Length: 596
Image (cartoon, rainbow, N blue to C red; front, side, top):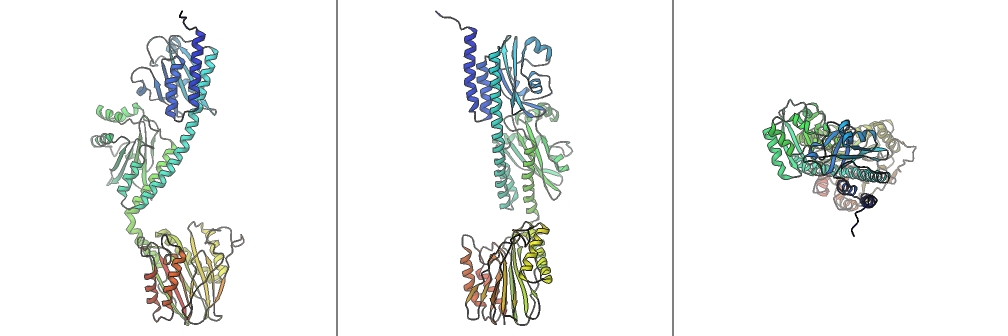
């Protein structure tokens, strides 16, 4: 004989089903799965007809992230709502206390509230709390007047806490993953932006890279005579790109618009709209068709950042998210501005490449010696060749007469190319000449350069070889800061590599000074008449996928042509052209001093 379940049996069944849901929440791997558990399984297990989950977007806004049941269109109408609104869910978030309300109390306290379902009902709102912070609210709607006893109420509170813990855990994981994704994106975008001066194609790929993980769609526009010209549009759903094109064609933005891309273009400041409400869309629409287009594209959050370089705004990048996308935050603004800065630099570099190249060449020409000093007892020759694709680099060298019997010389290399490397090269050459005038001793010069690095706070890598040749004593003294070792070419054709100990690269100990254990040994070798000294930068001996020792051996074999030659300058020029990397991928500087 069938016996209907007692209230105790029904409660036991609900608690059993809720316990199973709690277990599922503990192992949920995505926010979407948590939302599904709450809006579907929790709703069913609790015996509710409507269940929803709202999460805080910011301190002032709640977003309805999931709902089960309810009237048609409720998800769209309540996509977002203010924390300050007169609703049970918002009040629960404000008070951080659960609420159980019947129809009469609902109508009395919230007269304007939309009914989730017809007829008499009860609403239970449970705050989602984790780590002493409020994350949102779970709302359950029951038919009729629902009486929840202490046991069920406590279990529902436990369920809400479990849900909040799962959301908090997943949010932290998503934030960490989001930071990693942003770093990877910036690295890949930077590589693409730096790889080719054809920046328009590069920007198109960058726009596509941001979709859909960061935004549902992205548009990049460049300024052209006061107007924004759309360069690229990428959408997570390619079929929507036609909608965007129709939107831009039929409803172009006004240059005088108080918000949006043109305001960013005028001010050079980003425009972040964390939550694009339907009211905001309606207020910005020019007519009903315009509003329908905006709704079809599901505007939910928007971020526009300037492509700004050297105080000039070159264009605007805009990202938009839809219903399932992120709500942009201040952290997203910082990321967008970082990316836009890199893109703007690439654009600016492309536009100014020829001017910068010419400026660097003029600066380099002004800094490098026009000619080496003519000094009795010595034949001197030099050769400098810039990298084939850059036009100017950081290699430098010079010879300074110290007296009748002595010459000081140096060869150095600032890592990098262009105006920056050339500027540091100019500073280095000027500093070394000044230090030589004060005290030309090798240790004094290198210690002085360490102090220069500390004073100027330079962050470039710089190598320097410094030496003194003394015909009165028949010696060569050399000190090295991470630079390729010089060659000594003897009159009999033999070649000696002048190996120097403790070749710590310049600036590694910047700020510490010579008293902090930064030591470099001085090597002193015999320098007899007819001997030739060859100092050079690494561009002469280095090639990709080849050990430097191979390049040095190749140079040593070819350098024998310098011994006894009648035209040192011409022979050095031929030597450099034959030995350097055929790809011309690095600058080359070579200095030859032959004792006659």
